Image 1: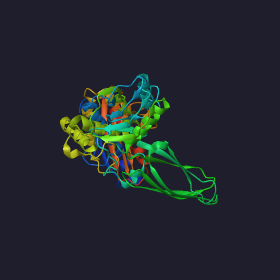
Image 2 (image 1 turned 180 degrees about the vertical axis):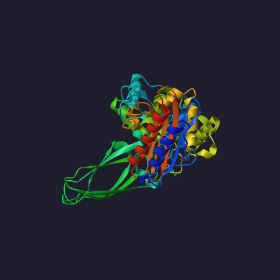
Image 3 (image 1 turned 90 degrees about the horizontal axis):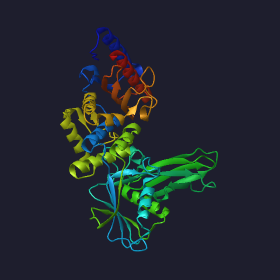
Image 4 (image 1 turned 90 degrees about the vertical axis):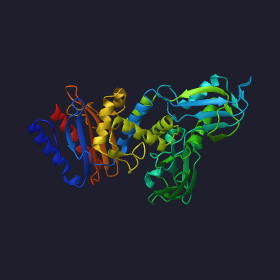
Length: 470
């Protein structure tokens, strides 16, 4: 049953409207958990099965980012240190290893970073060059302390583990820990397909059994991966003259991937690395610090997580929480930190159970009430403005750029979406005309219709509550 605490007439009209929406034939059999709460009065405006535990998909990121804002702070930055055993000689040579002590920074991307005006690794190379470094006589040593490499998360579905949206996590990351693989027909029939890896230093091994066939054939490719291994098996047929096919492949050793990307950036700047890119776990710091380099502020990272629903960055934030709370940069410690944070907010433990930071796991279960409790507490805390600003704005940006932009709703909703097979969720804040704010959550599971259909139902519910509450 739906309950609306408003005038009797409006309550009846809204209840009938919503009952008809969730009972539509296309959505028949779906499970719903819905709650809308006025943050000023604490009044429940609308609820349906508010205590029902359902899969939240990427709405899970609300828990990760809320905990990060509260436990780490909006100004928190991950720091990477560049160290040596001795000063540079007169010619700019470091006679030993350049030690790179990573601090969990996931923001090393090939594209330009807004605050730097260039890619982060190019900025680092520039600064090291500016300090006189011209040659590293030893190795480029990527030292990973207090971070655990997590790949093939045991609570993610096997099919997801071969996809770029299910990344490994470590003490550093580059290019969202994925590489780009192009598969093109060979020059002649019977030739192996041409496989190109970008970037070429990605360090994956490909077993290519894709053959080039005549133009009359239909192209098809199958690929197989083993969790936690940088190996890819390709089989199939590419018809001569067909367009290339592409794969985003998750890199399973992020620290080494980052190290090779850094080595390339140093070379572009004219800094020679004579040795190899190596990885050290739990190593001591060398005596001289040449450079400290910081990530963007947490508030910037959290905005990407929530607006773009970035799984990669969400899992790195979870590790940062674990490191700060328990001295262990890994998923388990991060989840303990999120659970501790939720308990301190007073959220009932039987209302949520989380297994990752991004929402890929189908073992995550939460109720609409737990989500609204989280949103209500965050909406009244010291990080309210920053947390709310990190969410997508209806009709304006992120995953809500094409939703809730009409009937006076443009920019009125700031929320997080969640989507996976048979799962759709929407949760966040809604601003009313008189300045009141509403926290809400709509979870739908086990539907057989398209996610687009369910999203339309969610948006209709939000609009109806907006009209009734104003």
